[in-house]
Length: 414
Image 1 (tube, rainbow, N blue to C red):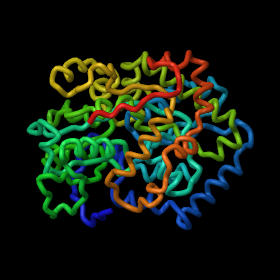
Image 2: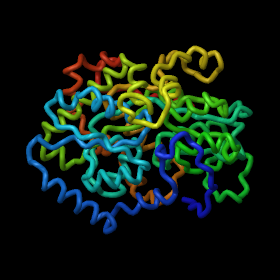
Image 3: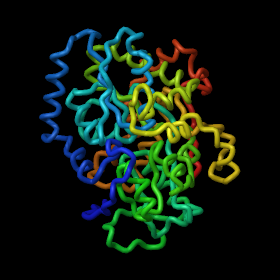
Image 4: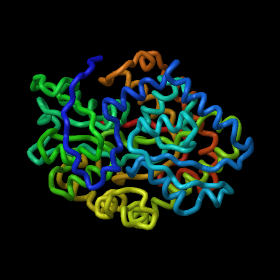
């Protein structure tokens, strides 16, 4: 795969510099070294940390998160004391600036309950060799493609630069599906290189820099988790071109991820953690504005640096009919929320995601990815025992507006 040696530099003018929730090229190189001999110090630290802890279920929940709406269930569970209700001790959630930091802390055992991008979980388990296990989905949808106001279709992105938050993200996967469907090719070139009319140059940017990059015309668009798209709308510098959930129906963006050693040594602890997160998702679906207030920079929890207008625009969305009239939503029959929550990790999604990643333009060493069998990954990466039991306690999938049953057909309509 092409390796870019030079990237654009953008001025960081986000409302909060603590909101650097993506992965720079330097961070990506850091993460790709979490494998083989380079991973040994982190893995030894994690093993030592695990051995020093109580063998039973009295291990505190140590949440690691990035300040994006993807982390909502973890933060709601903490705020509403749902972990305590399950008999667990709970430390204050720890906010990280980058995906590299949260992965390193997770491998080293500094945090033990995290949300990771769905493709990233595969990299951590199969690319780095660390025993990460997905026990549930953290949320569905919750991302969009934002563009400059003069961009009216995906085809208009030809010859332009578009920002993504991370190579191993559903955002990169779906963006490239959209590009291919419109006769465009994703590339990653130096900023001084010529971009052909049928090419779109992908650049990795922290979400906190994306709004300013769009405003300064450094990029023609970006695809990312909320509330960074909502922020572009509110500031007037951009608009929604497509919602990711309107391309891949009810896709998972981030996964509830635990260490395999914790699952093996303390399965009851893992069950209680999953119970709390599932109940948090259900609470969030019925308390959308309250959740936005909870997460806001001036809210009780102050879990994120984001203002209430952007968070409420995402969590308690009331404009979906207008998006449909504007042609942004192409599949109104899907009846989806801007962001929603349901915990079951459908095997069909994992299988489809592996296949999609194998045809997606990525940077770095992807040899491990090409060797993965989709069906094997769906069985090996995911442990759904805990979420199945947690769902029984809250009324099953129908409580989340989903049909009963643990199988579905993936619908992708780029």
